[in-house]
Image (cartoon, rainbow over all chains, first blue to last red; front, side):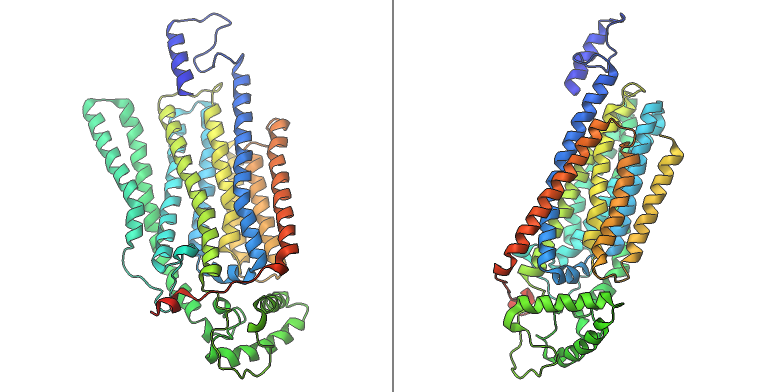
Length: 390
Length: 104
């Protein structure tokens, strides 16, 4: 794009303005701006198709593992902070709105508004990454990691104070922010108006990363305590879903009796047609019992053997670890797409300050918009699948 | 695309997000996944039709885009089918919780 532009720039400076000649934004090999726009858009759609197929591999992995071990997903989903996920969904939806609005502004040639809308989209992307950084660093602190590094200890789940991982994740953005401020000051001193106009919104955009971190930390601190307490003290609760993290709870001698009694009650409840939730729970338990083979004592039977550690504990590398492996792959790949989106949006912002776009030439804004909406679309599916499992 | 349309699509999407989060506090049994995916699909349709201008785009682009979902469906359905048929032969691997290993 840049090279064709440079070519066109030189061409234009020769000063052709006969009837058949092209405007500066129209590449040589296109007859009309419309043809150029349509070709670009077709290419973009093809790229988006590859993106969807790319992500579908991860969704497929998710489907397989969830189908094989639904209880692992239910148990581990408790560790994901729904508030943070919901806030991020809202932020991404809002960024989609501003992006769509930016396309409109490019078409109507409202340059100030276009720059503003692009900056708003970028800011939302930064808030998203900030919240994500809080989420990731919290999980790394707890040791909720992919199988090779999984080291969650339910007895010491808390890590107080500022996470070092959050500092590592924020450092590139802090460096970027300082660099932008320096660039802003230098270009202000030199009187380079264009650079000033670009640097100003970009400083705001980078500041929004730290707004995201603040938002994430506020929400995380408000929620995490209860969240983990609930999981750690799962044994104490008599509710059907309470012993998720430990499967049947048969590995725990203290709750063994309670759980089996509980199961009898649950069975009666499950007989009722209306209690589909409990019935589902029972089915999951049965299925798990079959999978676990000899490890499971029939419901209601007296347990004579003093052997603990019947292998139904979910807090292991090959179970919770695999869940977090899938979690990091899906959300991480999505975050990489957000970062790529930030890069192309920055390019658009520079061009919009340069006033490159007009009602005949807004293809780049439109195509980046399509990409941004796809990123949003993927998050629309990732959010309920990861954060809202019961 | 008029601004009021963009805004109403955005508010519809936000409302659907709130519904998804809200319904997560209930149990619908087997319908859980179907319901959640249904809401997500409505949201995705709104984004595609209005934000991505698919409702006004060339039919060819629409066909290309929708074709990708056909292939995703093929991919996932065939793989899941394969897993379903082979699952009985999978040997469950159980390992010790890391907390016990480290002894802390």
